[in-house]
Length: 139
Image 1 (tube, helix red, strand yellow):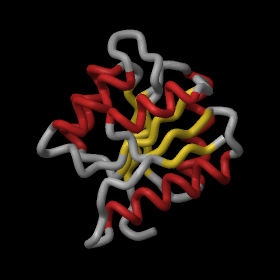
Image 2 (cartoon, rainbow, N blue to C red):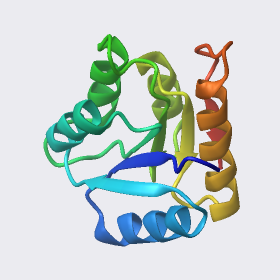
Image 3 (cartoon, rainbow, N blue to C red):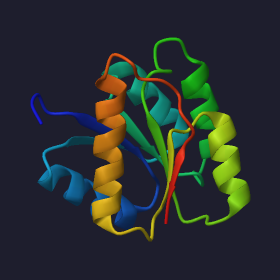
Image 4 (cartoon, rainbow, N blue to C red):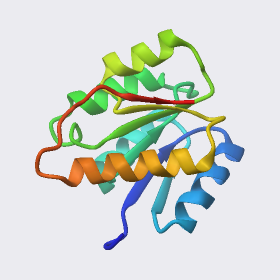
C-alpha cells in the first residue's frame, strides 16, 4: 500500500478506537480519530480520508444522519463509508444502505474481515469504474 491510505475513525468508545486503530496502523494505514459526529464531519472535510469508519451511536449526531450528510456533500460523497457498529439488526443494515453506506460491519467481526473490507472499499474507490454498489454486511 503506497502511498499510505488514511482511515477516519468516527467513534466515541475508547476501547473500540484503540482496537481498530492498532490493527489498521499495524497494516499500514494512517488513522485519524474523531470522537463525535460534528468533529468527524469537520475532519473529513479537512483531510479527505480514503475511507470513513463510522459508528452509528454517537453522542451528538446519529451515524446514519452523518452518513447521509457525507454522501450528499459534493466533495465527500466519493469517500467510502463503512458503518462499524454493535447494532446487529436487519433494520440498521437496511438504514445504513439507504443512507449511502458502502459496508455494514459488526464490531464483533474478526479483525481480518474488517481489514479485508477496508482494503476492498479503498481499492474500489480508487478504481476508475468505482460506483455505489449495495453495501456489504459483515458479521
